[in-house]
Length: 291
Ligand SMILES: Cc1cc2nc3c(=O)[nH]c(=O)nc-3n(C[C@H](O)[C@H](O)[C@H](O)COP(=O)(O)OP(=O)(O)OC[C@H]3O[C@@H](n4cnc5c(N)ncnc54)[C@H](O)[C@@H]3O)c2cc1C
Image 1 (cartoon, rainbow, N blue to C red):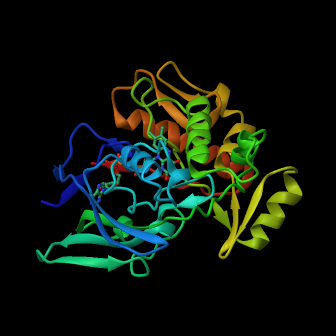
Image 2: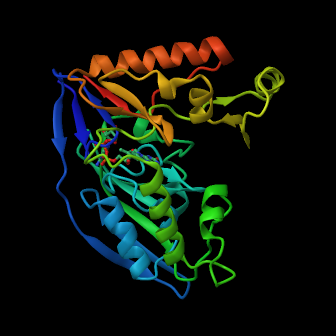
């Protein structure tokens, strides 16, 4: 029987019968491994809460993760899909990931060998590795990232010219609380789909047919906003009694009363088929469907 490592379950769509051995790590601990004048290297156990660690880092003046405040889940899950928000991905602050492999060896996988990409890493593709801890390389002098439009807007009006990491974390928390459903009250797994990346040629064709779509140039093509495609296709009004799109972020669907994962997947499939019909863009599910 294969195994599955569960973090806090915030990015999982579980079916009622799971044919895997499911384990959850309760490893805890935050340890300063090394310090220089400019940097601090911190090893954090997989079972720590992601948001609590981000806030303690900000408090300790260890910078680089402040844009990732309030993302639900554990530290061990963060590298799996290379969590990202408001212009920062966790890969930018990782030195290495400590992993237990199937052959019982514990090894450190360097940030380069993790093959981080947009919501992607080797851990997502190779599920035979258990992340025990993540070693972060954090900055003592803040290098703030505030280009993300919504964040920039939230920060306008501050008296300081350059916002502090503390102000950034506070702004991110405010944006997220206003925009996203709290999973402890409204069941959801965050974004249902990844933002699609299409070729430059495909993007040009889509833009010629659909004016005003946002596009973010990437090294491997053009990233489109899945939320915008879903919104324009009218999915905010296509919810059922059991499942609906969150009004301020239609990429997040909320489960009001569905009792089976199949109901969520059927809703996602209908959305996916509709988006393909309208834009010829293939959406890819972001959460993990657990059988
Ligand atoms: C409201 C909401 C908002 C969100 N916003 C964002 C966002 O802004 N950006 C973003 O990137 N994500 C976001 N997410 C998704 C989610 O928070 C992240 O994917 C998070 O990292 C999941 O953590 P978890 O501990 O709950 O992992 P789980 O959901 O339990 O697991 C996720 C995956 O990681 C694997 N995994 C977990 N722990 C380990 C381990 N120790 N070793 C090996 N594999 C492991 C699991 O097998 C699974 O494949 C959001 C989710 C919600 C509900």
